[in-house]
Structures are given as structure tokens and as C-alpha cells.
Amino acid sequence: MVCRNCGRAVPEGADACAYCGLPSAIEPPPKVHSYLAEAVFVTFLFFPFGIVSIVYAAQVSSFLARGDVVRAKKASGMARTWMFVSIWTGGGLILLAALALLLKFLL
Image 1 (cartoon, rainbow, N blue to C red):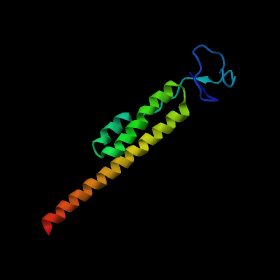
Image 2: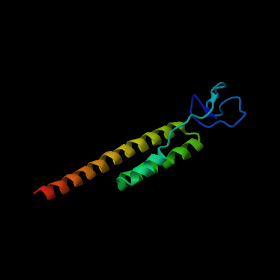
Image 3: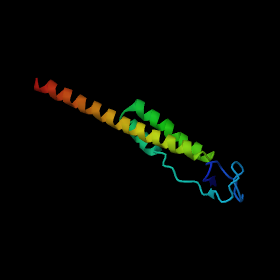
Image 4: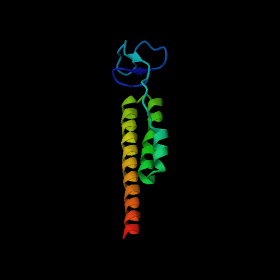
């Protein structure tokens, strides 16, 4: 369980958060998308930025296991950002290479 007020882990069966003391602040942990599968996929498109995305995506589950929802959401956002950077950079380089080959054959 995670405290709604401070975001820290609360043991099962506890009536209140041990850190902030709020009695009704207990709720199940939120789902945070890690983007791990997507990060692995885009690594084949453009290697360097895909690796950065994998590193951030792998951090999401460890942050959630510790009850740190804020950092898990931040790592998820960074994994998503680097995934899109990888897609756009890799796609752009592929288009530039195709254009260079086309110009080579036309000239």
C-alpha cells in the first residue's frame, strides 16, 4: 500500500501511515507504465538513445517496489521521452540514408 499524502510505502494491515500519521491515507499503489518493451524495440531502430530509454524503464519497477511513486512516474516519463527521441532520430537517419542513396543513383 502507498500513502496518498506522502507517497511512501505503508505495511499491509496498518491503520495509518507511519511517516505522516494520516489515518485514512492508505490506498493501493498506482499503475505506472514502464515502457520497457517499447524501449527494447526502439533500441533496434537507433541504439544509443534506446539504451537510455531501457535504463529509465528498468528503474520504474524498482521505484514502485520501494513505494516511491513520484520517482517511478518521473522515470516512466523519461523512458517515454527517450523512446520518442530514439524513434525520431533513427527514423530521420534512415530517411537521410535513403535520400542519399536516391541522389547517388540519380546523379
